[in-house]
Image 1 (spheres, rainbow, N blue to C red):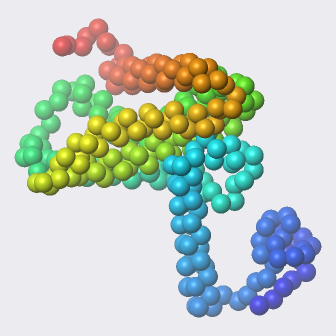
Image 2: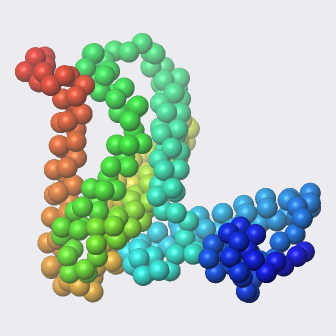
Image 3: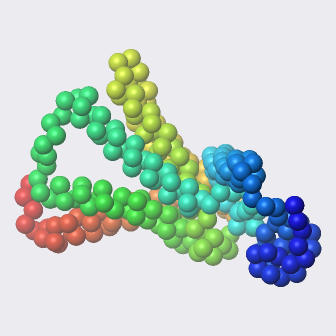
Length: 261
């Protein structure tokens, strides 16, 4: 092991165990097979998992407070929320696709496409742009809370953090629901899938309310918060409707008048 007087990464003078400029450790050693396996790989994976598990725990137990703490600067223990959202979106797309494939086999659904051309184009667009469309809910959340919860004096980027942690909770619950849906393909445990189908959407709505309540409860009375939360949900419904209309218009070349029912 060696300790240099200047940082081997950025070249600036150093003191202590870490470089004050770039954060690299000041004690370095030659890379050996033992060091590579037990430090670079196992140590890195352990800290990677710890960050994810801590972030998930905080998101589920105290989402609003966790977001405010992150905004205040307590960030070192958190895994990047937005990366984690992308990972869960990808996992959910895979689970949904695999569920549909099993559903075709299990329920003997013909593989031929029975949808009309517009329905097929609509589904194709959603499938090809699923990650982007799902991720759009984060800026929607941030924009709505920025408009409605003004008393906290957070800027738009800080509302993005609250929105990100809130949406991460939604993706965690959605992932759990999508996993439970596979009980559809069992003979005796289909009730679990049916319960998930009923209660996961309710839990998602409650978690959105819970997240924003824990973030902003000190700034509003209960009635004031309820009114603002209703406005928040109304804005989300309007934004979702506009997004679906725009997508439908795009895939139909804006020829709504020629649709046949």
